[in-house]
Image (cartoon, rainbow, N blue to C red; front, side, top):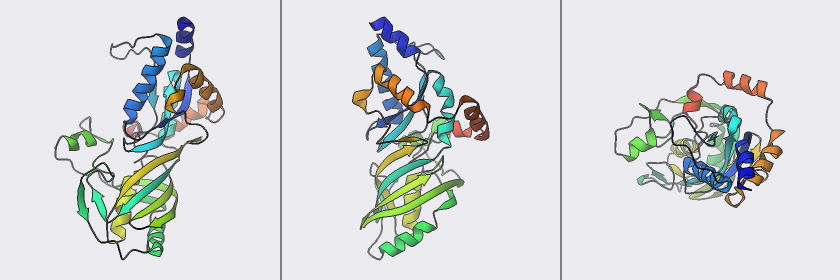
Length: 279
């Protein structure tokens, strides 16, 4: 039985989505999934550089404080993950007015507090219009972006002096206010690759002559995969259900030739160094 499972696991190829819970990093969630599958198949992981028992990766980082859809590539499917980086993503974000942290979310240390009593729902909705379409955005200091091969978030946590990356173009396809209960407000966001919801909330706070940070963030969709319809929760991380998810997902993905074209169109390869999608 173990031998059959090992053969089946090592034959899996494609892309499928999992549900990442709040708390672990995307890398840890991916490793937990990998270890579960290897244990079920009775396999051990190779430790030699560039040699893996099971090839697996993800297509867009979610911060540890965020939850939601994390797209996973397995086997040959890892080559298609580049198509996920530049694609459309949807988020539900709960933000808090009057308070900002060093990480721009609830995990960080409060660095500034400002009054927010002057802000009305109408004010907020008016400001949101200025953040729709093609905009420029400065990424957070705490992010998956790298300097000298090291993540900015790791450098910042180590106390190193980290400079902000320059503003870069990003796209917001849609942005709407779904709830306003000061100091909290809720946004529904659809955006392109390389976008940071934390930066958006920070900039909204500034535009309202106050400050703001993310309190809760959920990625509800990435590419064709939605949280409710497709994402495998942790209790379903087994070989049989991953195989079924790959089958169910196959018709949602581009054919291999168009996927290759998309990867070329997404060049330069800095996209793969910035699996930020988020947050």
